[in-house]
Length: 277
Length: 66
Image (cartoon, rainbow over all chains, first blue to last red; front, side, top):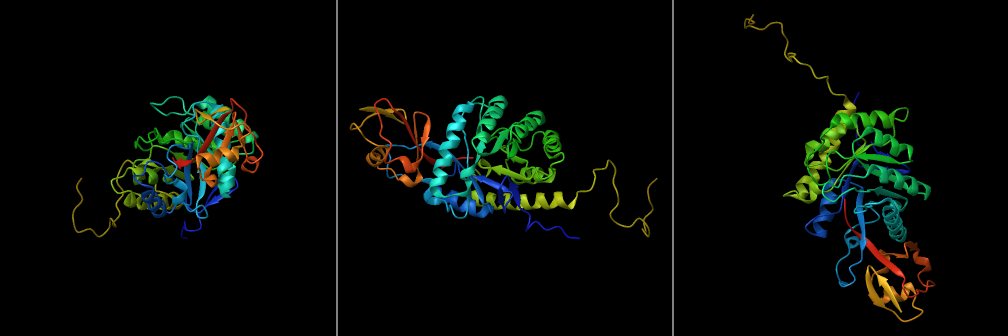
């Protein structure tokens, strides 16, 4: 038996992605650096934010001049929103732009409703409220959430296409702080619904964090800062790609149980040395 | 007439449409969405949508984000 990840796709609602890594487009030194980093990451889905046009700077380059919208499914976010109404407005504006681009991402949104600027932790009550409003408006909603399993379950009940628990705070690079909560989130969300997608969103610092998340059995990882602010974004983008595949393959292949004591890998018979008592 | 565009006041000739506004702003219309008084105005209605004094407009595009 051999486990193959080459045909292993990430399904979220009606979308099928060939990579389980979703990469953000923020915080790169230049648009060109972003473009190459995305390419090296192997992703086919990238997040974008909706912001006011800077009306004074008409000749500034637009992000979209550096994004092949035929190649990538765009996932617009509602970052920066602190209440449900604003998140719904931003989601609709994002949809309007993506409809104009004829990008398949026009029917989904990464919902972020934040509670304060210092922690950027999601407001669970407002996130649930916004999820219900957006689902009613025809969106497939991917919910950025805490790793609280009860909130995760409520979001799914509200109609979320995916729940995306944070490994740790956005941009913190602390990795997966509470793998047990992520496990319980998955138990709740995948009960009688094993294909329900759970994506770790936020907190990734380096490749081992991605591998750890994938080894827990999550369906995908969404990251941005860990690549954009790495000393070498290109090297880190490749590392994230490999970690996603390595972690997924390890998960599918079934790790050995952890044991307290050693088990010899070499035969115990025929040893010329005497065993200690 | 005076309208607000992205939080800044702006004078426009009476009867201006959203298309007129975007032309004056010299913005690439392919990458934009426009909201008028908190409701998105789909691009196919930009030509016919006449603004009135006091309108609150948001003109947004996509930027890098996570």
